[in-house]
Length: 616
Ligand code: ADP
Ligand code: MG
Ligand code: ZN
Image (cartoon, rainbow, N blue to C red; front, side, top):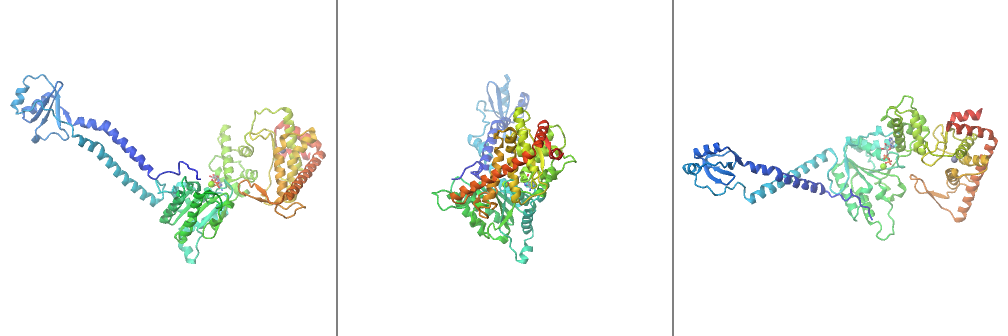
C-alpha cells in the first residue's frame, strides 16, 4: 500500500480552485465597498440655487420631494453629466416652489424617481460580468504561462499528473565546480552532457549513448548534488522527480505519473530526466504476496515499458540515484535501461581535501588553515559530513566571538561530528577520570608500541555528548586501501588496550570498554568470515554483506556447526590480542603511569606530547 503525502495527491486543478476563490472574494469586496459609492455617485448633489437655475431654464423633467430632500431629473435633450442619472438638493422651505415648477412645465411631483438599475441588471453587472472577466483572464494567463515555461524550462505550475519539476539551468545554481572529488563520476556525466549538446558528433561515428545512468553510492556522497550539477551544465530541460513521488494512494496513479513524465520528456527532447532514490519504486518484484505491492509493481512495469519505448537517439537521458543498488530489480539494470553505473564512492584523501576547500570557500578562513590535516583526520567521512564539519567550525568561531575560522575550529568540529559536543560541566568523579585516563593511555600506548599501527594524533578525557568519556584519535599519514592481517590484529590489540590498562592498574574492569569490544569483535569476525584471514577456514566466504552502502550489515551463510566454530575463532583472536596488549602495558608500566597522570592534568594531549614523553 502506498503512503500518501500532501504533495502527492496534488490535483492539477487546485491552483484554479484557489484562483476562483480569490475572484469571488474580490468581487465581493468590490460589491461591498466600491459599487455602492459608484451608485451613490450617479445621484449628484447640487446646491438649491443650481436647482432653481435649471428650473428657470426649463430643463427640469421630473421632481420628487420628501421630508429631507428633493430629487430631480433633467430633460433628455439637456444631456446631463456623464454617469449622472439624477440630482438631489436639500429640501428648502420654498413657498414659491410649486408656482415656479408649474411655470417651468414640470408636472410630476410625487412620483418616486428610480435611481437604481433593475435587479436583473444589478446581478448582471455586480456578479456575472466580473466573474466571467476574471475567468477569461485567468485562463488566458494560465495558458500563456505554460507556454512560456515550456520554452524556457522554468518551474511549473502544473504539469499534468506528474510532479516533476523542470529545473532551469540557473535555478539549481550548481555546476561541476561545486562537486569536488568524484572525478570519475563527473567524467561519465560530462559525456552525457556533451552528447546532449552535440548529438551529431556521436551520430557521425555511429555511437549511441546509454539511455540511462545510475548513480550509486553511500548516502551523502553527492549523488543528488551531481544530478543538479548536470542540470546546471546541460542547458537542456531537466526533469527532476523523487522516487517517492510516484508512490500513490491508489493503484495505477504511480504508473500514470510515469507515463505522463515520459510524455513530457519526449516533447521536450533533448532533455534529462532525473529520478532520485529510485529504489523506492525500483525494488525487486517478488513473486508471492497477496495483493502486496501491486501499485509499486505497476509503477515499475510502466517505467520499464517507457524506458524501452523511447528512442535513445532523440536525446532523452535518464539519470537515477540510489544507495541500495543491490535491491533494484534486475530488469532495470539490463542493457537498454540503466546499463551504465556511475559509482559515487566515499571521497579519498584528495577528494576530502577538495570537498573541504569547496565548502571552505563559503566561510572566512584564517590563512593558517590546513585542510590536508583535516582531511587526514576524517577518513571515511562523506561529502555531506565534511560540509557539516566546515559549517560546525564556522558556528564555533561565531560562538567564540571570532570573525574567521581557525584550524582549531575545524579540528574541534571534526570531533563534534565524530563524538558529539564537549560536556564541560559533566560531573565525572576524580576516580572515574583516573580510570578513563589510564584507559585512553592504554589504547595509545598499545598503538604506539606496535609497528603496523596508525600514529596517535590526540588523546582527550573531556566527556562528549555521545557518551564517550574520552577517546584516542589515530590518524593515518596517507590514504589506506588495504589492510594486512598484521594491521587488523594490531587494531584489535589497540581496541583491547583500554580494558587491559584498567585491569592492569586497578584490578577491576568497567563498562567503559563496550564500544571497544564491539569494534574489536567486528574486525575479528570480518577477518574470519569475509577476509579469509583465519587458518582454520581459509578463503571461504561465510557471510554476505547485505547493504554495502548502508551500514553493511551481514548475514551468516554457513551451517550452525561452522557458525559455532567461527565464534570460537573470533573469541580466540580477540583473546590473543588482549594478552598481547597486556604484555605491552606490563613492559611499559612506568610510562603508562607517567602518561596517564600527565593526561589527567592536561585533559587533552597531542600526539607529539605523547611521543615525547614516551621516547624520553
Ligand atoms: P546523496 O544524494 O548522495 O545522499 P547529496 O548530494 O544530497 O548526497 O549531498 C548532500 C550535501 O553534501 C550536498 O548538498 C553538498 O553540500 C555535500 N556534498 C556531498 N558530496 C559532495 C562533493 N563531492 N563535493 C561537494 N559537496 C558535497
Ligand atoms: Mg540524495
Ligand atoms: Zn576505549
